[in-house]
Image 1 (cartoon, rainbow, N blue to C red):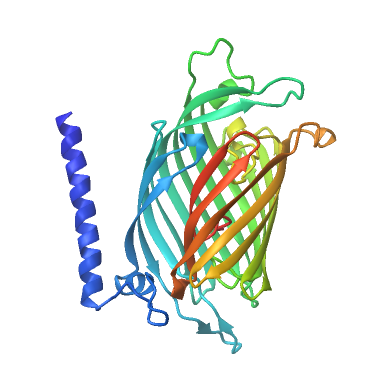
Image 2: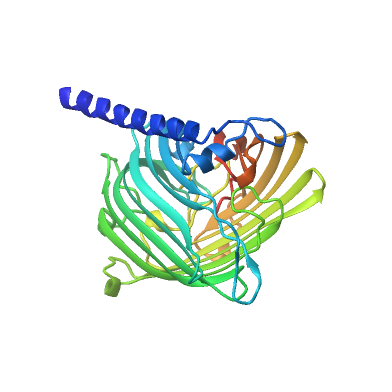
Length: 386
């Protein structure tokens, strides 16, 4: 108990030092929290002149991990100026994002990790990396029998994860392609069920995933945080094999299309269509699932998933916006039974505030209703942030 108190005090002291450094550095540059154009509350200069560093406290609202929790994410955000390529064309550079995260939720799930998303300007390479360790309590369901009720199984995962992606931009910088890699080592603790979960294979209890893949991307959005126009299309392929050190032989194909279009001066429409197909024998926890607001993660899974979602943002007054959205999805094991079960749906509303104009970054809250329950989400940028 004494050791835990000492550790807790050290963590709080470290966070206090980080926040103090942030504030002092911002004061050194005479940073104010008001925009020079409209005088509204704005964090743009604070993020830029505090060396892009800020400690972001976040509320976790995902139903799959208890519905409530907290996270602290120290983030370095570096704004990059456009460059002129050798062909004379201007190339816009996304902001560099580097940070860490620590989280704890109501069902005693916790995770600690670090991430980075940045650009190597001269070689025109976009790269991402993420590493974390977590002790997560998640619910999975046996829901492949159309005439029977779903059965919930609560499982504990102790997992180490590492992911990286490196994309080389073409002459048209909106297009890029390159390799990606996923490593996942997991140990699953099974409670004392009367019957073991039907979807758990004995080798899933302690397993290693090693996946090598390729990605092809077109990104024509006007910014990465909260786009007003443009489309992003990406195709992913992952291969898992014993030759890579994996316990599984499987393949996964993902297709994703996200687009935004200004329907009027103050009305932005958005459409998301995503599909995922698993082949071979992947572990149950890496099968395609449904990612929709109002639907708990891992609630509906299968060998195939199809998701579509429509969204509208009405810029109502100054920096404030009103959201409305709805989606349909399905997860199934066999294409001949694609719609044997009822379609999963969700709908909801929310709001956004333009919190950093120079980054076109909006934040807000969404409230969504799915097939079975309500959920709410704290949104940083966009719910479709990719």
